[in-house]
Amino acid sequence: MTTILPEPPVAAAPPMVETPFRRFVGDFFASRLATAGLVLFVVILAIAVVAPLISPQNPYDLSQLDILDGRQPPGATSGAGFVFWLGSDDQGRDMLSGIFYGLRISLGVGVISTVLALALGSALGLLAAYAGGLSENLIMRIVDIQLSFPAILVALILLAVMGQGMDKIIIALVTVQWAYYARTVRGTALAEMHKEYVEAARCLGFSHARILFKHILPNCLPPLIVVATVQAAHAIALEATLSFLGVGLPRTEPSLGLLIARGYEYLLSGKYWISFFPGVALLLTIVSINLIGDQLRDVLNPRLQH
Amino acid sequence: MIAFIIRRLMQAAVVLLVMSLLVFVGVYLIGNPADVLIAADADQLERERAIIALGLDKPMWEQYLVFLRDVFHGDLGKSFVYNIPALQLILQRMPATLELALAAMTMAVALGIPLGLYAGYRPQSVIARTIMAGSILGFSLPTFWVGLMLIMIFAVQLGWLPSTGRGATATVFGITSSLFTRDGLAHVFLPAVNLALFNLALVIRLTRAGMQENMPMDYVKFARAKGLTMRRVIFVHIFKNILIPLVTVIGLQLGAVFAFAVVTESIFAWPGMGKLIIDSINRLDRPVVVAYLLITVAMFVLINLVVDILYSVLDPRVRLSDRS
Image (cartoon, rainbow over all chains, first blue to last red; front, side):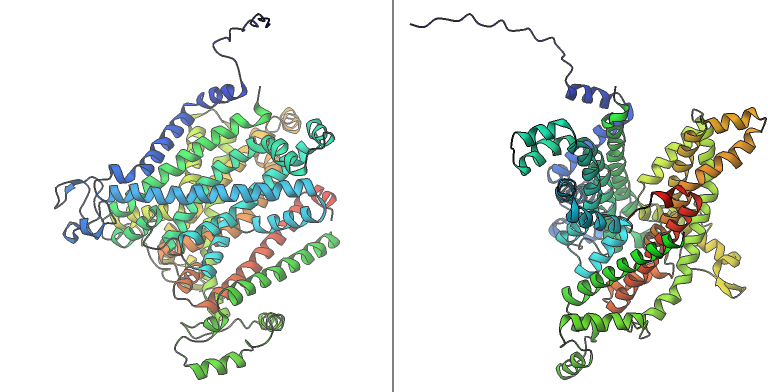
């Protein structure tokens, strides 16, 4: 015998409940400049992802290159019949395709190093805040010392010792960036640790790891996201600079920085496009990320929140 | 005050020691020291003799002590390429980098402070907004690309300024510098602008922030009520208060300028330390790389020390709050 319970009345949800996430999205898109930055970044990201599909040419397939197409100005037609919209480099490589492929490498290195540095820095920052004592002193001293040297110098030193390579530049970028995250997380976590919810979690007998990663870390996220956006832009610019100087990526992995370096020698003879356009692509990438970061900082800043 | 300086000096010594250990580990353990110190064209017998002569068969800690002793004697090895002591080579190149850094910082401060003061004084005006938009660009533009564009526009297209080298130098009061000749100034202009841009943006933002922070304060109202002109209030009263963060950041940026000179010098073929280190890395001239690292680290520790001391002179509150 079963009694059929009356269904509890379902409260008809109002069309727009104000959740923190919706408010965040609304605040973010309130700025036209930030929206433009986000759109620009999404376009750049999409180009990087589908580069092989939309490029007129595979710039690194030697069989597709014709030396007779070398150093064509923007708008010239190649021997194979397509148009070099942004000109070609000394080996007859289409600059537009080169930039599309270069974006893949530049963004890839930037994103991977940012994620790794974020993970390493947050873990060490959390540890410093939670453990205190000697380990905190040690970690924060290293952070202080490292941040007193400019990032480019530290990266240069590391690459001088390690040599070129994709893995090596990622190691260098992670090394120069983790300290920013460690400092940010420690600062926020120290403030969070004395709040009641952490005490409650302790009283419930949760493990240290659970309190750290499931309770404290999520509350440290807002400042972390802001720092990560700014640092991602830095990482991309730094990689380009190091590759330009010839100590970053090898020639087989041509990021935007290497493309610019390749055009350097032709700049003096007035063939500007080999360096100019990859630079514009780099600039747009960095500016779009910075615009997003600026707005995130305003939106996520608790002092400015309503 | 003296206790403060002594404490800071001790900290600096510890940092230097740690750094020397890191450089030692980096170059002597990760790379094979035999490859670093012995010329590549030496045969097997010469190699073995050299390994014993250089003490590379001794235990690690002993090698580190020997390395430290050599460093304290100013013996940082000989450059493989130039065949002169690495230290001497770097010291020869240092004046060129110093004058470039000086020119860039002068530009950034001389332009940045007035622009920042104005942007803070009339934040809503069109000029102020243009200044701020420009400063965002100054932060975002990659230094090396700006350098290339400067060469493209002013050296190649317009042909106004030279793009490579240091130009003629002259000696005034025993200091040899290209800042004293017309030709030298023409040569230093583009690289200095390139190096100054980022710092210019930074100085503008700092000055503007300080201006906006101080304008609504009581002491400003009081000074105005006393009948002082706005000009005097800004340039004497507010300016003094803005100076504290400005000195700190400019001091610390001086170090960053040395680091970024690596980029600018490479682009403009400026014969300074920065170009030397890039050339040395590419030619595997390791003794020069090691010497450059040690000198730069020492320079940074020194700059940080001077900034700390200056800061405590300008703002006595720092000394009181300094613990540990």
